[in-house]
Length: 211
Image (cartoon, rainbow, N blue to C red; front, side, top):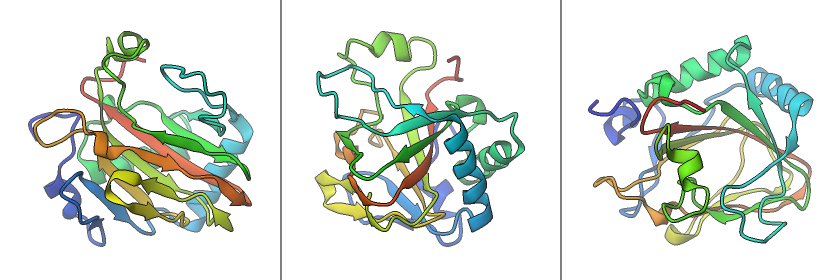
């Protein structure tokens, strides 16, 4: 692979059971049962123990733009290290290019309004977030539980809504094939209407992580 911070369509489609969402606008993939029930439960317990209010880059004045809770997960933890190894095998991305694995917890009424995962080049926080490790390349996200009601991820530009299912992985390229940022990756972590929602996210960078 030309860039160790990049995955590829060919790399991901080599995994049995993975599905590419039919769209010419972005590279988006789903894989059910990437993690089993016990693995999900162990990661949920770690999120519960370490959660804090989530934040965003480039504050936009909307105090309710992202209302979840977040935690960073250390690869010194065997359960986290095992997940990191699984993601490396799936993605083909050098783990040195990955940000720390992050867990998120959403209560009823909480959401993350439509956003992209890449950093806006003209944003006030661009230099602070991208000077050392570069732009985000790929996103890998895993739902850790079934949500009784709500909590779907909606990719508005392509009209695709993904329902949370325990162990299901989503992966997408934040850029187009020519390397330019892809606004079609705009997605909305929709409000949880009943119960809780837990996810794990791993973002990768152009250059090795130096957070």
